[in-house]
Structures are given as C-alpha cells and as structure tokens.
Length: 623
Image (cartoon, rainbow, N blue to C red):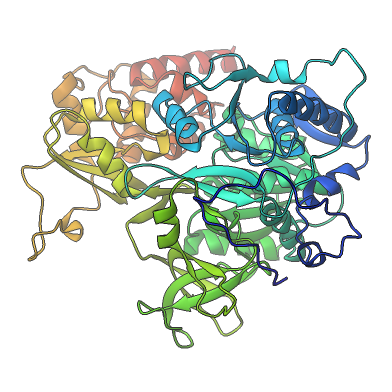
C-alpha cells in the first residue's frame, strides 16, 4: 500500500462536502489502494447482527443494536449542524455510551475528540477550547467545560425517536476527512492536538490484521486504555471487523488480580497493555500453566530485557501470544509490530505496510547498516498535522527526502537501529520527551506548569527512579513548597504527569555555556520527598500500633524507600503512585493472604486507615 493522502496544510480551510462516496467497486486511486474513507464503517455494516458488539458491565449491545443507536446519534448530530470536519468532544467515561458516541459521530461524518472526565477541569477546558469543538457530549454529571460551546448528554442523543427509526447510513466522506483529534503533551507547555484522517484509521485495522495482531473471527477485545490515549483507537476499530469489544472498568484495570480474573471470566482473546501494566499481570496469567487464547499487544514504552524474556518464554510455551507494538500518535497509533517469541535483544518489530521508514542522521542523510539514526515515517498513515498549529506542523511533518512528488514524513524523535532481518531496535529519545507507564510526556510542559505556581523562580523535571527503583518523575524547583506544588499540578495536569518527588534547590547546575545541565541532576531520590512531607506535616512521630500497621510500615519502607514511616503518613504524599500501589497490594497479599484490592490504597491512603481496613478484612476472613 503506497498511496499518499492528498496534502493539506493544518491551517488550510477544511472541505465541507464529500468528493464522492467510496464503495467496494469504486475505481478511484484512493479506494483502489485500499484506503477508502468509508472502509471502517462499511465493514461495520456487514458485522453479524446478533453477535455481541459491546459488553460493558451489565449492558450488552449486539451489532444490530450498535448500528441502530449510532444511526440515532448521527441523525441528532446532523440536526445540530454537525457534519464532515466538525469536532465533537466526547467527555464520557469508558463504557457503552462512549463506544456508541464514537461510532455515531463518525456515522455523522464528523470527528471525535476524547476528553477523559478524569482529567482536571483546566485540562478539559483547554482541550475543548483549543480544538474549536462544535459540541460537547457528557454523561450529565457536568456541563460543557467551555461557556459558549453547546453541551448535550449521551442520553439525549440516544433518546428513542418519535418517528421512523433512522437507517444506518454513514455520511459520505473522503479519505482526508478528519476522523479524530487526540492531544499529546506539548514541548511549548501547551498540549497539541493530532489530526488523523478517515483513511489512515481504516488502514490501521487492515495492517494489524496483516501483521497478525488481529486474527481469527469474532475475537473478544478488552478496551484497556484511557479514551484520551491513542491506543484506544486500536481497540474500538476492532468492532469494525466484527469483534466484540469488552470494556474494562477502572477498578479492574488497575488491580492485576482483578484483571487476570476478568480476562478469564470474559474469555478475552486480545488485550492492549503497557509494559508497566503487563509486568505484575504476567505471573497471574501464567501461574496455572494453562494456555489461553490470549494475545497481548504490549506497547506505549520500552520493554525491559527481563520482561521481554518472561513474555517470550510464555509465548514459546504456548501460554499466550505476545507482540510488541510501537508508534507515535501522529502516525495513527501503531507503526511497527513484532512477535515477542525469542530470547535476545528486545525489538519493536518491522514497519507496518502503510508506512515507510527512514533512519536518518542530523543532516537528514540515511545512516549505514547497523548504525543508529532518528526514525522518520512516511506514507498514508501519517497524520494531517497539529490542529491550528501550522508552525509546529511544518517543524515535525517535513518533506519526504525519498518522495519526488512532494510527500511528507513525520520526525518521531526516536532513535533506532535496523537489524539485518528488517526489525528495529528502539534506542531512546533524541529530545526532551519521555515515556512513563505508556504515556508520552514532554517535560517542558510540566516545567511550564511549575513556574506558573506563585513563588517558583525556576524548575526542571527529569525522568529518574524512586528509592525502590521504579521509574518516576522528579521535579527540582527553586522557590515554592513541595506540598503546594503537588496540589497545584494535580489541579492542572493529568495524574500521570504529576511528579512523584519534589526537591528544592538553591541553584541549578549549568553547563559552561550557562544552560541548565540536566545530567548533573540526581536521577534517584528517596528520602527527600519523605523529609519534605514530614517538615510540612510533622507526621511520623507517633508509634505504630498493631500487626497491620507494622506490616504496612515495613512494606512502605521497601516500596517507597523511606527511612521511617508513621501511622499518619499518606502513601501518595510520600511519592506513591499507581504502579507502587500495585506492588504494595501484592506484598500485603503475599504476607497476610488477604484479598486487598488496589482501590483500598486510594480509599485509605493514610497508613493508620489502611491498617484498620486490613484488620477488618482479616476478621471477616477468619470469622
């Protein structure tokens, strides 16, 4: 597949009417190359009507019901003036309503913008404002994040029409018509919206099938990602080939024991997951030695050699299948895929057929065999650009050095090395961007948020390790109080961008040229966060009381790397986060044989309260 989508500047006026209606018999260049814009929805139209399409808690939708609900939504959106190139902000949690809203929006010819309700209010407001969304769909809990932008509830969109039911008839669009906008962290301190066209989204599904990442018929696919994370696109597109989409609620997805049980209960065949999430889950999936018809699509961050070997061993033993997938949001989710089936150096597989790879040096010259270079990607799955950011679009979406017709390639900022068999080895970033627990983070965005806090004169954020060896964000700041900084960032940034540790400095190290010397900042901290917390709260002086408190204090010391723990200490204020909460729960279960859910750590973050909860669980178990 080598067709190139028509070029259009991110700042150029968007088309408002379709050029034609693609069909299976269409002979136009775009459709003949397999990039028909209606391909996803056309495939959805032929899915068996009685088969389960969406399973979300107690709600189950067949494909007939999904198409009928999408048709109602599309008709109502059309009546509100929504059509091709319109953007509909979906401020909905993971659930059946989100799925039908996505399909309904696409059926109306429009694009969707995922706005996770769990994001801070300021972040939600920014996404809606910056995208220029025409409409906001909510679950009724809140109104529109932006005054002047109309809000409707999902229930209003799906209310049974008084007349004849609307037919499932997707509005005709072109391959370049906008499909969705997803925001990523921004190096300028502002998140940037990535625009992806309809043909690119269609190609993604086809290429995952060709790569063996989506196999069989009637698979059961777990939706594990946040709606605001581009991996979610890979998951909902599976509906369009007739697979069943099973929604995983937040409590289940963040607790490995619950997730492992859910995979078996729901007979999941496919699960997209980050390495950080897969690590504690893998032992639970393989401990009984029985095989599962499960494919793990592992992506979002680099896989450690130790995890790679464990996944490969499970793959070779037939316990499950594992593939490593890699790709930037700007190139429609996944750019490469490779089986994790053998020992040796971790790799990200080969480039999928809808993209063409260039490994270039600083002068944009191809590197030699086996040499490292920056990865550039070209082809029909490269996105349209950044929404309303022509300058940034021109900087990252550059002229393709190997395309005389004027095509573009995307500069990923990732360094890679090509193996003799055509697979790529990921070597890290070439800029200030990092990956943490599957999220792409621009450190300057966090630094900009820190310097907006009153009293902070200067700030720097690095990706380092906490005392337990877990990858964490560390904030160094000149001026300001750690407790106030954490609170301020929690109100402004997604949870995954809030640093775990805060270190006050009198001055920052500099290079001979006077620039910040990041390499001189310590990459591992433990007690500084603890000591700052104690200085602010005076905690840690009371004696521990009882077996549960002593056990938790010992485990917290191991997990957080703190020198001493008091009964009034708060797990998260000492630098705890979701991954450390999982480790904490695993150790408590192992030592006390008590089924402590991860959500208990969030409900009882204070040591004394968590200990009391554990005592209650032990009493109920022994009764």
